[in-house]
Length: 354
Image (cartoon, rainbow, N blue to C red; front, side, top):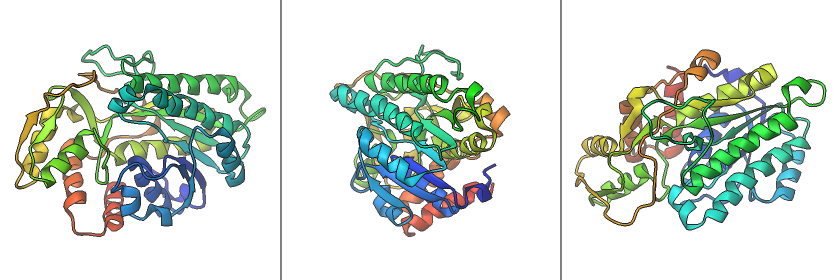
């Protein structure tokens, strides 16, 4: 359970605040009274959730590239945050094939820059680096991956996120070591890995849910690339709640929680791409069905699940919305006539009061 009172007045630096997940988290933090400073590039899509919901009015909006170490360092030292959450990333698998150098630069060096910047800021007590379930060396097995599994990655995106995890581990041991906590430093550092997140406000290209919504709105058949690929689907609020709980624990209890954490759905949330498409087509009237995309497709994992037992046992975090509810909330957000900020805040409140 998130402690709303904990966040009131906390100074929070959030990288990637203009993205889909970053916009949701910005609204949630602001609604709890946190003083949020966002550091990131312009919104990556048009339309974007950031602009539709007016996130820029809720926080201090700083435009900067995570690869700019000088600007990032000076921003963090000026802001003096209590908590830092790193979400800025190149997050599209297909883009990692077309521009692998940019992907590694953002996801690997961007993470290193973030951590290096924290070394020069004594105010930060808790830091969470968000990666992905794809950071694991995927063996395509039916078992769920635990936090102690090997890092890896077939495609450049997944590989870059595995590298980011290794950088977090190295900085934690080298500069934010638990044995020196309270003497040489006061920062507790953790990483967070989540499954495929879905929810209103995602307009990213080459991502399943936005592609489906665009096709259904245009009365076109949905084209899907990997109908039998199984993913751990979850509403965006699920992992975000995990990040918030983890940050609270790090701030309050230090290095007891400074490690890697999985935030994935129950097994019932691991479904095939085809299952997701059929469900959404059923929920949205007037859909034209779907067809297989016969174009050239890059390799993507066909089976991937997370084991979140550690988060259940030690953080008290549990998924609240099953997959059918997550899809209902998604459709409700896109097709509601309500103002988007109010709709987003209403769904956050619904989730928070379960």
